[in-house]
Amino acid sequence: MDEKERRDILAALLDTTRECVLVTDEGYRISGWNEAARRTFSPNISPEGRRISEVLRELDLHEAFRKALDDGLESDIRLEIGTGRKFDVHVSPLRLGETREAIAFFYETTRLDRLEVVRQEFLSNISHELRTPLTSILAFVETLEDGGVDDEENKRRFLSVIRRNAERMNTLIADILELSQIEAGKVAVEPKAVGLSGLVNEIFTDLGSKARSREIKLASTIDPEVRVFADSQRLEQMLVNLIDNAIKFDRVGGTVTVSHERRDDLDLISVSDTGEGILPEHLVRIFERFYRVDRARSREMGGTGLGLSIVKHLARLHHGDASVESVLGRGSTFRIELPALEK
Image 1 (tube, helix red, strand yellow):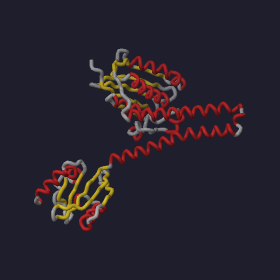
Image 2 (tube, rainbow, N blue to C red):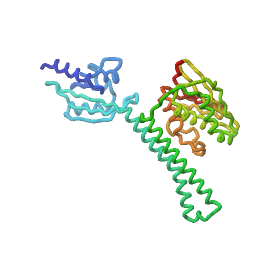
Image 3 (cartoon, helix red, strand yellow):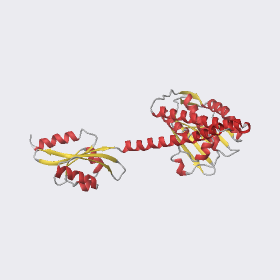
Image 4 (cartoon, rainbow, N blue to C red):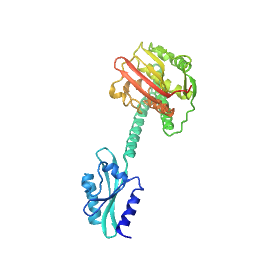
């Protein structure tokens, strides 16, 4: 088999792998590559004959190629190119007949690295959110054990605090389990025609006492004939989250309004409040897990920081989405977008 045949076989093999692959000759010039490498490292010009330093200006990579070509040694390095993409790179010597070359395989880890960061943040947030009520529970239990149980005046108050924090932990754990089930694809929706006005009125009845305690008016502008295509239970879950949040964060004496609009092939369900509004820097992150605009106020009102993330995931399970708009000093509007029911 001559060298041309060997190179044709090598080229065919390289093009069968999804990982980026580069081959250099003794002069550190690129003599082989696959399409994935060309698109990633040299999209505007053929890499053939170019020095590796022209394509990737990474000293660790150059040293790995040197070891392979001069010393016949393999190397494993971590590499991050300018666009933020990360790779585990394996460089080893390569012999094609009498030709001494080196080959590098680039295994992209960008997505895995991001998922690891998300996982670590999630665990950190869970630990923090659970530690806060647990610390309070332990402190009051110790107070009762140290004689507080005989203090009739404060005993009931202590037990009330313990119960409230235990309920908060229970709600948080329930939301974590719910979100993990959704993200794992273990939650299915069964869309059907749902009367939106009746569903909203039922939620208003359930949340009425909470709204009255803050002198907030609940209003619906939804036509009684409106039908949307959704899983009734999951739609109720989304709306309860949004309406409950609107009541919590509206100003005292404000108004929470639920409305509906048909736009092209989408049903848009909006929940608007007349509160302080949300700063633009918060809007882009507000549907993230555990993200809170006002952490202290959210905890005080019993929020877990997972409700909006659950709403977003459930909307997407319906092949829709969730979004938010806000004007400082005038309030916020959270919107659920659902594919419209065909007439």
